[in-house]
Image (cartoon, chains in turn yellow, cyan, blue, orange):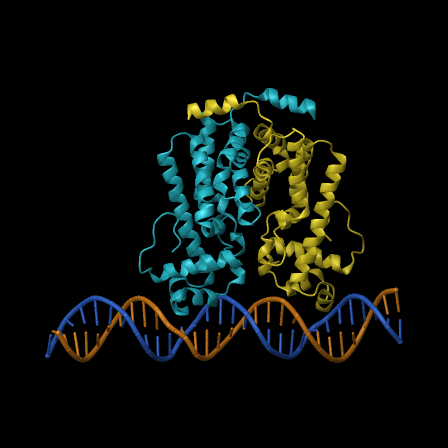
Length: 211
Length: 211
DNA sequence: AAAAGTAGAACGAATGTTCATTTCTGTCAA
DNA sequence: TTGACAGAAATGAACATTCGTTCTACTTTT
């Protein structure tokens, strides 16, 4: 079973072996280029059991999705519990996402880089799921508390996390070959100069004049 | 034929009708949930002609991809030709992307929101294509000229365009229901406070102290 | 003995591709 | 102007294959 934090029990239960194999295959080739027979072969679990547990190919993808969504949700809860202050929470989330991109690459790719709508047509978009809502809630609370400059919630959340997520995509696509944690400080610096409750409007007007 | 700027000739040639139908279907359902028979039916062009012109289903997707890549490339050339200064070029690109997200939604979705690797396995990732290279070149030139704060090129490019691209994704996923051009000024403000050759390091240190 | 898992053959539906045939189009002799 | 005709373009029914799913007979575990 692909875990974000826990370690897998040994011997792994049957359904976990299926999800592990499925994650690797789906990420490597894409859901539609993987047959359920491939998952069967790779996991070593019989066809009958796969259908017993998951009900079909889509069921496997859905099971994997729910399992990982829950882990992301737990990650957010932990951040909120352990870290005080909206800004530091945002920083912690970016830090964790960068770390996991290196150490749990398949998971990040399956959750942040796949088009779930194409193989889980009944699921709402992942950006409307719990973990993403939590991120936006953190931003909103930061604005309410005056820690983060006020603005449209969508714009502010995108400004804060957009650069990091973009970098993750570029890294997963093989364009960036530096491990992302190396960029942490620089990214965060950019973020807060952008979303800080900016007094430096001077700078902005100077830009317009110079342009 | 889906065009970013030109208007379609009348009557449309056969291969254009195929691409128009394919774009709509691929964007609506995803490449793998569309059969070539669907494209046949929707376009009204016979099976044989489709194979004559494109060589197969993947050929249709590839033809569409190349056609639109060229149009994006032309868009970048136009921006570079018409707009002086790196910052203003970046702003113009964001403005255009926001506009096209509303007026040429399918095109933006096919180019910025699809996972091409899953159906065009031989293509390099779109972020390594001409238009994206152009965007990074603009950022690099801006850094060289002192218009944009110096930093890792990947980080700076992601910081500048990441928020906007994230917002486009959220809009295409149906989460944001305000047309994006309304956010233009606010997004750009965030961008330049983040990537400006920032004097406001005071602010930054104050943040660290407060955290 | 009941429950859970395995192995793998079989099946139907869907899909990508092919190709024999028909239709169109421009040319040229009558 | 007509009509024959050749080559190109277009057609769509037929084909082969793949894939998701089901099922049966058998084995292991509890």
